Length: 497
Ligand SMILES: [Zn+2]
Picture (cartoon, rainbow, N blue to C red):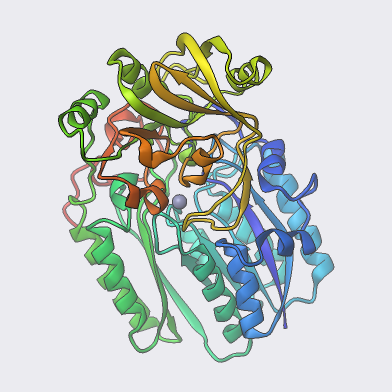
C-alpha cells in the first residue's frame, strides 16, 4: 500500500496588510527552495510532535509506504498570493502524478487559508487533488482546530480529522489517527460516512482553549462520543475569526462506519452541545494598567502572564506591538519581560553594537499604526543570540525553528527579546536561548493568545487575556465583517440553528 501525503498550511488573517509570498513559504518550511518532499520530510518530522510526525508513525504502525510530496507552511499573515498558491499546488500535483499509482492521499492542511483568487483555498486544493486521483481513491484530511471548514472541503474529502486541542498538542496523535484510518479504508475494513454541520456561530481564541471550560468539558464529551459503537471520529472546528470570508466560524463533523443516519443524529447532538455554550465562549479582557496594579498588589505571587493575543503572530498579527511595553516603561515596572517582539532592524543594530553597549533604539510599532507607536529610548544590550532553537514544550516538541538574529535589550526594568523572524512565543525555550528565565520575572508579556499555556501555563500564578488593540484582538466589535454568512452569533441575534 502506497499513500501520498503533504499539503500547504496557512492561517490567513484577511485584516493583515502583509501579503504571503512563495518566499515566505520557502523560508518558513525549512525544506529547500522547491520545498522538497521525500527524505527531507522524513528527516525533518520523524519523531516530532507534528502532523507529519504522526503520518510517519501511523504508516509504520499500519504497515504502508508513506510518500511525502510537499510540506509547506508559512507564518500566519495576509492573503496568500495567487502565484504562491498555484506554484505550490502545481508542485504537489506534479509529484502526485509521478508517485502514482497511490492507494490514498493524506492531506496536511490548516483549513483557514485564503488566497487572492480562492476564498476557500483548501477547498480548491482538495478539489485539484480529487481531479488527479478520481473519486475511488480515499482522501483523508487533517485540519487545525481553527479551520473555517466549507461544505466543499467536507464534500470532496472522505474524512476530515481536526485537532482536538488548543494549544495544539495533539498534532502527532491526529496525524497518526489519520494514517491508521486511511489504511483501514484502503483495506476495506471500514466505509466512512461523514456528516458536516456549520453553525451560525463565531468564537474567539481565549475561550477556544481546551485547557479551560467550557471547551475542556466539551472535548471530554466529544471523546466519549467517539467511543460509541459505529462512530469512527468526530471533529469540532472552532474557526479562525480574523478572516472576513463566508465560511468563518464554528463547524463540526461526525464520521461513522457506513451509517448515514447515525452520523446525522450524532452531528446534530454535537452541534447542539456547542450551541448551548455560545455565551460561555465570549472572552474577558484586562488592560495592562490593571495587570500592573494586580502584580504590585500581590508582590509574592510569582509570575503573572499578560497574553497579548491582539498582537499574536500565530494569527497573522505583526508581533511588534508596543502598547504593553510603553505602559510598563511609563510605570517604571521592574522585573518585567516581553517575548518575542519582532524588529529585525533593531536586532541587527544590537548585533552591530555588541553585548554591553547602550544604544538609542526605535523599537517595534513599525508594521502598521494599529499596535502602538515605536518605543524611542536608550536600551542596554544584555544578550545576543543566533535565534536557533528546538521546541521543548508540549507543542511541536522536537521541531527545529529559528527566530533569526535575536537580541535581549533592557529598557528601564523590562527585558525585551527582539527577534528577526515573526514567531509566536509559545515555548519557554525561545526565551531561554535569549538569556531570559521566565520563572524569575514578575510580569511576562507574551505575543500569544493561547498556545503559550501549554508550556508557560504551569509556571504562572495568574494569566490575563490582554485588552490591547490589534488585528488579532479577541473582540468582534473591532472588525468590519462584510463577507461572513449572516446571521451569525454574536454579531446578530440568533435564537436557533
Ligand atoms: Zn490553530
